[in-house]
Amino acid sequence: MAAQRGEGDGVVTRPGETGTEAPADVRERARAIPEAAVARLAVYLRVLSGMVEQGVTTISSEELAGAAGVNSAKLRKDLSYIGSYGTRGVGYDVEVLVSHIERILGLTRKHSVAVVGIGNLGHALANYGGFPSRGFPVAALFDIDPDLTGVPVGGIPVDHIDDITTVCAEREVSIGVIATPPQAAQAVCDRLVSAGVQCILNFAPVVLQVPDYVEVRKVDLAVEMQILSFHVARRADEAAGDVVNGIGVDGVVIRP
Amino acid sequence: MAAQRGEGDGVVTRPGETGTEAPADVRERARAIPEAAVARLAVYLRVLSGMVEQGVTTISSEELAGAAGVNSAKLRKDLSYIGSYGTRGVGYDVEVLVSHIERILGLTRKHSVAVVGIGNLGHALANYGGFPSRGFPVAALFDIDPDLTGVPVGGIPVDHIDDITTVCAEREVSIGVIATPPQAAQAVCDRLVSAGVQCILNFAPVVLQVPDYVEVRKVDLAVEMQILSFHVARRADEAAGDVVNGIGVDGVVIRP
DNA sequence: TACCGCTTGTGAACGCTTGCACAAAGTCGG
DNA sequence: CCGACTTTGTGCAAGCGTTCACAAGCGGTA
Ligand SMILES: NC(=O)c1ccc[n+]([C@@H]2O[C@H](COP(=O)([O-])OP(=O)(O)OC[C@H]3O[C@@H](n4cnc5c(N)ncnc54)[C@H](O)[C@@H]3O)[C@@H](O)[C@H]2O)c1
Ligand SMILES: NC(=O)c1ccc[n+]([C@@H]2O[C@H](COP(=O)([O-])OP(=O)(O)OC[C@H]3O[C@@H](n4cnc5c(N)ncnc54)[C@H](O)[C@@H]3O)[C@@H](O)[C@H]2O)c1
Image (tube, rainbow over all chains, first blue to last red):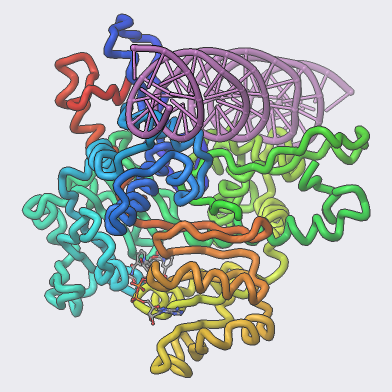
């Protein structure tokens, strides 16, 4: 059972398995791409797509880094993971970069998405135009409520959860999105996995148990809020603690 | 202008500034809490809250780690950042742990939330019961659409975006949530900051520019999808590349 | 052609995070 | 009261990720 990855996670790169070390082949010098870099590549791609629309043809690492909110050295290192497509003294060709990032992220293929749980959040997701436009067509919607079955949401009729296996197979769903109440999330997850879905995006505030070969990412908004809350508290402590040499109200040093 | 933190970010802990080293005070031995640990503490808190409801009074690091999907050593280290509240040979008192995590995360105070942009996503957020129940009451809703002004959503009437400064001050909003179209996000962000909001959760797929003292976290679902897509591609390459010693179709080694 | 200035790509250092392994410390049964 | 067993808390080492700094490379110019 693999734990899912999520927002606050630090190191998530799969470590190269030691032990069965393959011979030092020349081709082995190419590196695996750190997951943190993958996440940033997706951001660069979005920024670059905007650049293309504005008619920008060339961009330097400094400019792109500024637009993406990262350090330019980090940006160059991230891009170096996918190859050397820049021109020294000039910068990067925007369209070339876009196509290479898309290739690495596997966006040359379409990835059909299924949303399970068509409540408040599920409706918003089904209606969201940002998924199809970025290569993730929403191909199926599921709910347990029989009153919803057949009702079109965002142009797609809702199927009953019991049909999940056949429908997912028919429509070649590769990504499942869980937007059910937390109590139902694990069961829904299990059904998605049985249906052959190997990538899951989970909005329910529960830790899902899945086989190792399934990739789970979670989005927990309450956790995001709590991290922000921590920073509010940190700031308050800082302000109050300045007079006592940086010691927070609870005796915990916030900034050493 | 500080870049916002988000899902895939790795190291986000503010490094202790070297140079002006304060005298080695006894109280200084306490450590700052790494941001990665803060995110996990929020998860532990959620799991522990569930335990309380189930009537569990004591839990070992092994059990809690399993329920939270992390290594038990990591869990113990995370908990050690906030103090020593376990009993050797027994485990942790669930309620004690809950209260201490809540204290560290600043949840003893209520943090009022304002949602800006009451469209598909804004409606879902306003109706979501998970925020108030975890200490984040939604105190204000804003939209630019005059037809929405005054309409109650999730029990709260929508205010016009032009009133953001006065309303946020009146209701002591400390967290702003941006759910507007991307084109409007930066302007909305600027207005929130002017209104004194120092913590922002951004759903719009844009990189926000904010002053250093403002904390931004972003949730970009398309980026999440693209990370999943990368793993799909990785897997496909792995399967295809097994015959050529782990080399992906593009010559990029996915798993060395 | 030779030089100059600019930008990329990357080796190396540094610091954070993780995971191991174990002493310390407490409980429980006898 | 003691000894065996359980579990915490943490020093330490290894692994990643970030950042610095600079040689290498390219276009433009004289
Ligand atoms: N609404 C939000 O803004 C928001 C924000 C963050 C997280 N979440 C989380 O997302 C999830 C959904 O939230 P929501 O507000 O949309 O809830 P909701 O109650 O509005 O919708 C849940 C839907 O899931 C369906 N459902 C229940 N059990 C099911 C099952 N076994 N199989 C298939 N469908 C099932 C229900 O019929 C309902 O339509 C929850 O876990 C919630 O914690 C929601
Ligand atoms: N719907 C989703 O599931 C989803 C998922 C991921 C990301 N997002 C992002 O969230 C944002 C909102 O998505 P949505 O689907 O709810 O869009 P939407 O068009 O349904 O709603 C946007 C709302 O913002 C309001 N608005 C526009 N300009 C404004 C301004 N200057 N000030 C205040 N309000 C303003 C509009 O009146 C509208 O009510 C977008 O940036 C989108 O990319 C949405």
